[in-house]
Length: 126
Length: 126
View 1 (cartoon, chains in turn red, brown):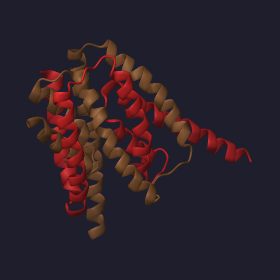
View 2: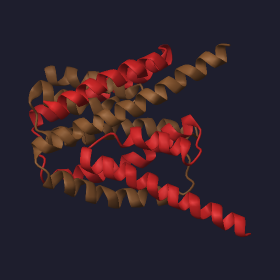
View 3: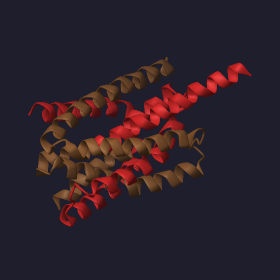
View 4: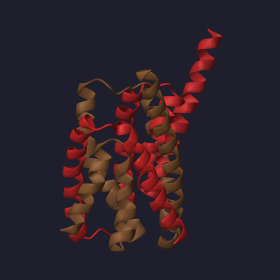
């Protein structure tokens, strides 16, 4: 009986940690919550990869909606920008999902991280 | 429109499941001189429609895990308040740099995970 209680407390704590991490990233940076929470779900809570990715979406969705509403008070979005980008992203997302099936994603992730690193450095330094 | 194309690019990366959506933010700020706050808000909004579609599919396939889900989401929602408050208080220029740093951290995480994947698939082949 005692063992079961201990394990539950740990999972409760880890779950909260996951949520807080995702929420903070989502709130401060408007993104990246998914990239933090997927490895956390996998390594801290022991989810399988597919479960991590799927559950991450379930988690990030309400967080994004809330952040959206909170941001609307101080981050103006012009319809000029908003609509085309939104449409582009949605179509791209569907295309990406189909592409995922065909490509060898492992090397893409490596290339992608280098691109991200570049962008990060540029923003940080310049 | 150039905006739609940018969205499309970010969407493809995001659709491949590697948090590419987050790249939308530097794309908007570096290419179109968009404000950091607005770019972040744009990313949050763009995520929503695709997430809903993806989530429906994942739910159908039963990939989503609901254990302790409220323990993750509720603290996450609270953290969004804190996060967005910080984003609001920090100026756009500083937030940009912080975001750059965040991207660097994310890129390292991605890179390490990517290497892990490459390694494990090589081992599978052997």
